[in-house]
Amino acid sequence: MKYLFKSIIVFIVLTYNVFGQTKDQIIEGTVSFVTTNNIYVKFENTQSIVIGDSLNLKNTITACLVVKSKSSSSCVCQVVNACEIQKGDNVFFVDKPKEKVIVTAPKKEFVPVVLDADELQTEPEYKETIRGRISASTYSNILSNRDDRHRIMSRLSVDANHIKGSKFSFNTYLNYRHILDQAETSFLQKNSFLRVYNLGARYDATPTLSFTLGRNINPKMSSIGAIDGLQVEKYFGNYYAGAIVGFRPDIFDYGFNADLLQYGGYVGTLTSTENFYSQTTLGAIEQRGNGDIDRRYTYMQHSSTLFKDLNFFASMEMDIFSKVNYTTKNNLRLTNLYVSARYRFSRALNMMLSYDSRKRIIYYETLQTEIERLLDDDIARQGARARINFKPYKNIFAGISYSKRFQSDNQNKSDNIYGYVTLSKVPNIGGRLSLTYNRNESNYLKSNIGGARYSKEFMNNRLHTDLYYRLVFYDYTTGMDSFEQHYFGTNLSYNINRQLLVSISGELSTFDDENNIRIYSRIIQRF
Image (tube, rainbow, N blue to C red; front, side, top):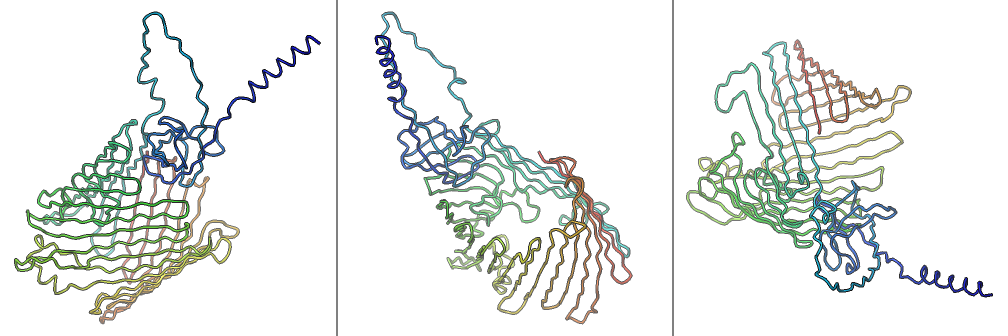
């Protein structure tokens, strides 16, 4: 009995130690927004979460996020361990009870322990991602009745985000073209062209504040094009504001031009939930030429997605300045309006509608000698388009679209009908077969174009082949003779590895006694 009594006491003590402790609390959250640099997670309450804590994806045991900053209901996080995070993912935080440590004051002198910086920072604040692509290509026209033409081109694009885990990022997109066997007759007819479309650096001072310097296109004001200068952007929760100051690229050679000053700002709001996404930006821009106002306008840009089925996009530009015969006015002039909507009825059917209205952009200083002529032709070029894609049967895809261009003086009108049918897996021989038809009717020309293309992959999809044929009928309404033209073409492309691709294509076109050959070759290296 004595030993039995002791055993019961030991069992009670052990049971208390195991089951009497406070259990870990699980706090669940949802990824509400994903950017290039940060992941935003929504919680009901973040009181138990501190900066530096780790978050896990649901059904995983490996930490995927580290908290960088927080508010009362959300956390700004950085991805770790190469996890793939998407908007709407469920995450959780394990709130372990903090152990109480009783410290006895030392009788002798206390020497604090100083931790090294490398010991304090377990994960980098930013994750480095570098993607790039460089390509070289040749294009040759071998003509039977005219001089041959040859040209070479090369492109370089690099997106380096948070280089070595720092706050600095770099991006560039360059294009070089050289025409062979052509004499340079003027400044506008040169043999060599170097175009710099993007060349800039970004500094993320905080997760919500960034500075961009150089030539860059801002996606929140894409209609303005490239900006040579400084751009600043700041987020305030779901709202943001930005400002730019710099120069427009030269209108002739796309180089730097210090006479084309431009500056402005914008504000916007961003909403992102599981079933709804919306972003709207409003801004104002002033562009100058040789110190005087060239153009002053406001713009709006909006995009939204509802239940991943309805996508809507709209952009608008409204000029608010004019200068004619040295008289300035603040007249309103709608120069650009574009709206589009796409709805997915099911996996087998979707439809897109769009409308645009555009007027010629008038720069009152740069084009001051042609202002009156341009204003006389101040007519909106309008267009509407409808497209339906559907999948009537397994392995069969089809679509049809209709677009119309029109304006009030009945000039530059055009009606275009396009349709296609694709068999994604041809019986017995494999590969894909596509049939297309296009009909266009304008003020001076009617054309009918029919085509067929067969594609197939070999060598575990590393070798891609194409064979195609097009038949074209041209019927001019201005009195010129009608004619038909035949095109025969092929293409071979080979993926040496995931990063390196080489391809070559050739085309023969026949028209009466003309036989023209086009050859295009390309090599692409990704990194």
